[in-house]
Length: 97
Image (cartoon, rainbow, N blue to C red; front, side, top):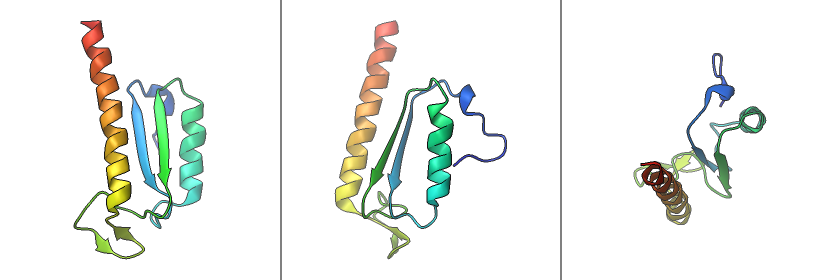
């Protein structure tokens, strides 16, 4: 989340944040600060929060219950969001050529 030196106005690429809503490592205040910073930009950004997911929800090796834990349903949803973003980005890049 926003840290010293972070200048959201300088972002020119697409941004996709896939967040476990129950992630104990990312406080709600940090999430809200990031959202506030991004709303002030012209960046193309998306923020997706997954209920019931904690940190590392896409990592099958994450086995710390309640802290960092694989969640196969959420992982599939997250990868689908990522693939959509990449398809859009590559389609736009191809169209510019």
